[in-house]
Image (cartoon, rainbow, N blue to C red; front, side, top):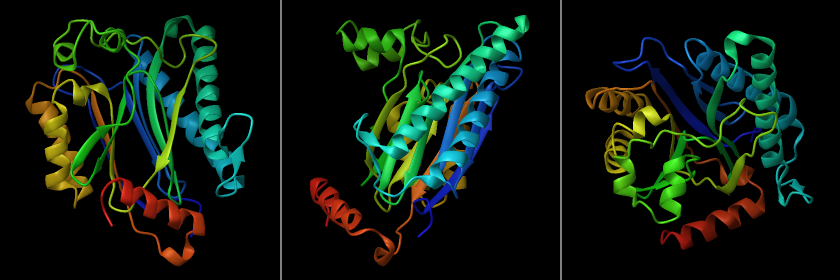
Length: 281
C-alpha cells in the first residue's frame, strides 16, 4: 500500500449565523493521511490568518517529513513513533510561524489558534491537539472523545468543581488555556492508537460541540456515516439550527479496509487484538 491508511474524507466549514467572517481553517491531504481543523482567535482578520498559517505550515512540514519515515519506525528518545514525532514537530514549527508573524505586525499581536489533527498510516493513528478543537471516534456505534480540551472549564471539571453537564452551561467554557502562536513555545498533546476498518473519526471546532451535545453528534454519524458528505452537512446543519453562534467546521474520516496482504504482519496481529478488546471478531 501507499504511505497512508486507506481513508475517505469529507471537510466542511461555515461562518455560522452570528459571526461576519470565518476564522476556522480546515485542511486535509488524504494521500498523506493527514486531516486538520484550526479555530483562530485574535480579533478581526487575525484569527483567520493564524489558523491559515497553522494549517499551511503543518501540511507543508508533513509533506516534507512523513514520506521519509518507515512504517513502524520508533523514536526511542520520545517513546513515540517517528510519525508522532513528525506531527508534534510540525505543530511546534507552526506555533513559531504564528508567533513570529504576530510579533512582526502590530495589527496581529496576540493572534492565535487552536488545532486538532490526525495522521493515519497503515493501522497506526497519531492524534495531536492544542486548545479546545476536538476529535471523536465512532466505533461500533459508540462515540468517544479522543482529545482533552485545554480550557479553564475542563481544568475545573478535572478538579471536581463541575460535572460535564454543568460545564456545558458554564459562562467561561470557551476560555482556552493553550493555543498556538500566543507564546514562543507550546505544549502539544499527542496520542497514538489503532485505526480499524469501519471507524469513523470526527474533527471539529467548538462551534459544533457548543451547539449540539455528544449524543446528537453520535446519532448524526450513525445515521449518515455511509455518506461522509451527508454526515458533514448534517452536523453543520444541526449546529446552525441550534443557533450557529460561532464558526463551525467538521472533518469526517472513514477508515477503509486495506488489503490484508499489503499490511505488515504486526499490523494484522494488532488489529485482531484490538477487535477482541472491543468485543468484536
